Every structure is written in structure tokens, then in C-alpha cells.
Length: 89
Image 1 (tube, rainbow, N blue to C red):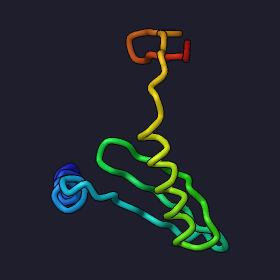
Image 2 (cartoon, one colour):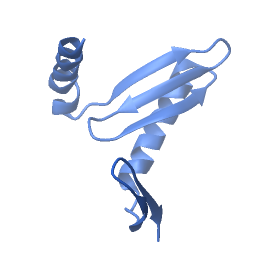
Image 3 (tube, helix red, strand yellow):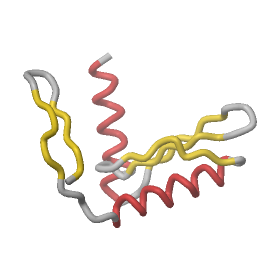
Image 4 (cartoon, one colour):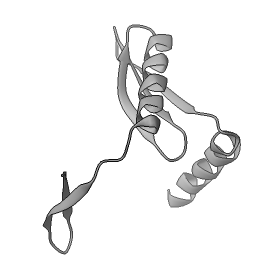
């Protein structure tokens, strides 16, 4: 299973992310569609639309919005050996 994941990951890098393209996945949920979009570093999900094109357009809009967003300062809220929780300042 691990080997198959690495093959898919390498394939996506070679055909999509290396060339600056965006990878889309669109799922049919009956009367709505759900899209996921990734550029290799950022992934957005839960982009719903009435048609596959509308869901892809929403995913692309949210991906561009996340790429242009200013990073927020965060501080450690809680930390133990297995988990670290951050919150915005």
C-alpha cells in the first residue's frame, strides 16, 4: 500500500505540480458536487457546487484566496508529547 501511494505521489508531482498546474478531484454527491484542489503545497477541500464546473471554480477561487492570504502569527496554546495546539494572536 505504501508503495502505491509513493507512485501516485510521484506521478502527481511529475504531471501536475512540477509544471505549476492544479490537480482537481470532483465527487458526485447526488444533487451537489464536492471538489478538492491542490497545487502541491496547499490543498483546499469541501468546495461545493451544483455542477462539476461550479465546484471546480469554487475550489480554484479558494486556492487562489489561500495563496494570497497573509500568514497569521500563532502562539502555542497547549503542548504535550503527542500534540501541539496553536491559536492566533
